[in-house]
Image 1 (cartoon, one colour):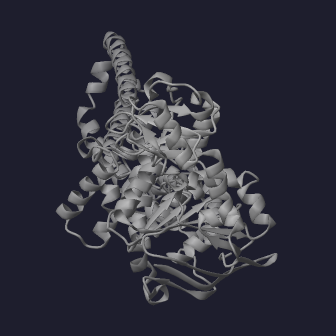
Image 2 (cartoon, each protein chain N blue to C red):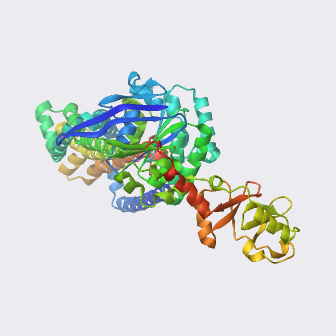
Image 3 (spheres, each protein chain N blue to C red):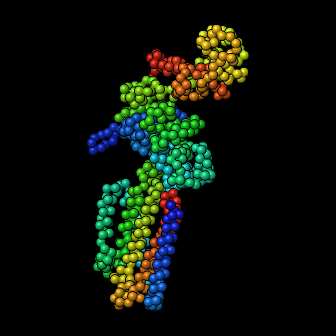
Length: 244
Length: 377
């Protein structure tokens, strides 16, 4: 299974590369490459800014989301947890652009409201998956652990979390993918990032500028997804990691 | 030793108080296997879980080796009691070695000692340590997982083992194998074992004592043979089945029904000597053995009377023999298979040891019904 998934991953990558190459050839013919290359300096600077937004908002979402999911999964939270999850679900139906707008109306313009908006957008998948992963740990593992004389914290860290980790990581992966893809909107409320090239390019009807923002955004999304995948491959114990 | 004194558990439910265990009294001696038996919802699992305080008794006392379990911190108590559940509960995120080392680590053993112990235990449950220590539970078969589950419970060498339907989820063939392995291991380790089961055959096979529960009450606490021979009431008689006397065949070894002082002759003995021997012992059958004592055949009075010659010339072949350490079920099964009323029995070396007959078995099994009063019920 592990080998097959790696293989299929490689095939997808190879196909993707071929398509990108074909697109590249087409772009070269149309003179697009030169137009995009013009913005080399901007791309480097804005990519950095973009990643900073993603790293801070995503990092905070993980730091808050994972403990929140763990806390909601505790037996004494059973009653309230479902209600809270429903509220969070409702929150996730609000479009990200609206979240950013709301955040701007509360915090003004700049980096802080942008980070807050991105954080809010990526929090939910992390909480939801952590919570679902924890609930998915079969009760008999916990019974066996209790019967063997493990204390609740030992059971949490030694049995429950490792067994929920794969699902939690899937949530983190989704959240960060959303985050990178949404981050261009941050430009609209003065947060900077690659959105600056995209939206200005659209406004000025300059495809080269637009692509100078869009292509790095897409590459970053793929890169982040890949990086989280690698981390989860190595961090989730082999016994509960379907990929290994 | 495990001793329960008036142990009661009442659960408060919206529908009122449910008494899951009602004033249970029992005592399991050191090194014995006690099977808690009964239909589902009868309180057997509740009773088991009160011993390691996964469920706190409402009232009553439980003693392990004379010590009141209430005086311990429940977590510390559980580390001194082995625990095996039906779903096994091996932690999938840990290797076999890590699973077995859980309790030793909790007890603060150093890592080398714990690993050494894991390796020894795997060898005792017939899993090659070199092959299995680093495997994950998902890489084991169900039977192997259950063996590791037992090894994990034994890791810190606890004097007491609690098992909640441990072999319930294993297919019948593997279950027999694992039961036999467990019994063999138990004969060596002599742990005091409490074992929940709903299978009367398993109870008869494993138990030194059987406790039958119904609706939270301990209905009968007796040895398997007593239970099968003298069920205390109709419920128990029903539960152990109408074939309960046949089940007793499993409990008794051929040796117990043996008629040992059977005359033997060797091949060269003349028939008149054989007939004299039959008269002297009042036996219809004489066994022909080789010089070392192995059975070669038999002579029947009705056939050889009036004939002459040697034993070798007239001997009939034995259809089959049973071993002295087989159970009576095996002996009876062989008798039915070969349509005979008696069989020759051999000892471990294959030497003739005596006869076992259908009449002898019937008499032995019937003894308990004819015995005078005073049988503990």
